[in-house]
Image (cartoon, rainbow, N blue to C red; front, top):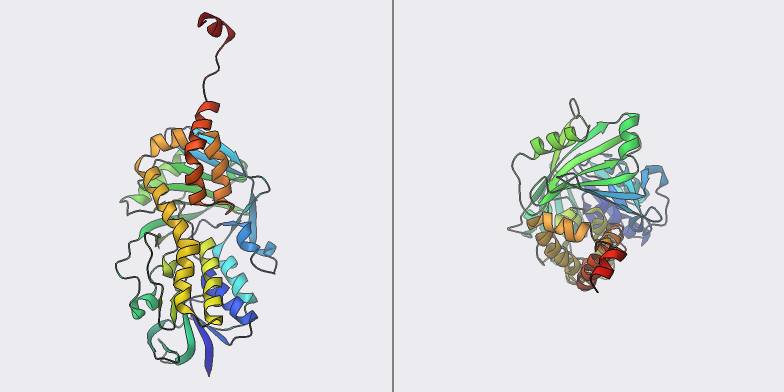
Length: 381
């Protein structure tokens, strides 16, 4: 049987593309190398704006809503920002990804990786490990950071990866009382990245990521810093994953093949977050297929996602190369502290933050100025 579209990968990008294509009445085949639902190392913080893209309810897979963000520097200084309206939810990626896939009107084949593909003017033939071959008019590659579709199509050559490591930790009532209502970020403890504690319904997801390069000893740093915070990880499985952060505009299509999500390298260089752009690019890819415009997809990603992530790369290089001064002048600056929760919730952009940065810096420094007593004022006359 031929399909209108074959989607390789059932993560948020692939499941989203399959959903929107199915809603448009297309015959869709999803090929997933694992058995779903499958665990994915990920902090699991998702802006509610992502959920609002879909017409169905996500409450069955929401572990917790977040009302605060805590930023701590390695020397113990801490700043807390409120998140009005709880704009971020915490999810487990196995359940979240599967929830989207379950709503897609698509045929799903699991446990059979793609090993070869060949395209011509009218479509793409995809061969799996079992020896079966499927044909689709288009192919959407949503198969993650180490995308086989990208390699077979000759796309994203010379890409660079960050890395992350994560542990799901059983939490006592005391730990949940301490960390259960906030997204916690520990800054300055690992080069080119941060450590995190994200609360779930009954446990904590803790991890460390480096986004602009690889840092040796990431596991040891995570163990040491979490121990200082009273979080022990003995006996819990450790899982690592590459992070394909966005560094430059790249061609994301070849003929009738397009790349989405991590396969397209759409990971935020500052936050290391990729779910928001995975879902957005999945919807863009569906629209490109529906309009027979794969080349337009690359342009749309560059304009809509890539341009802002390039601004994010500038912020990341500034922050991670100068963490102490950026924490002092940025994170502890009330004006920037108001900006970050909006960024984390998908309510503003890196470019908009950059345009407001000079004024925010001046106003924030003025708001933080030491109070002057009346006596000091009178002595100064």
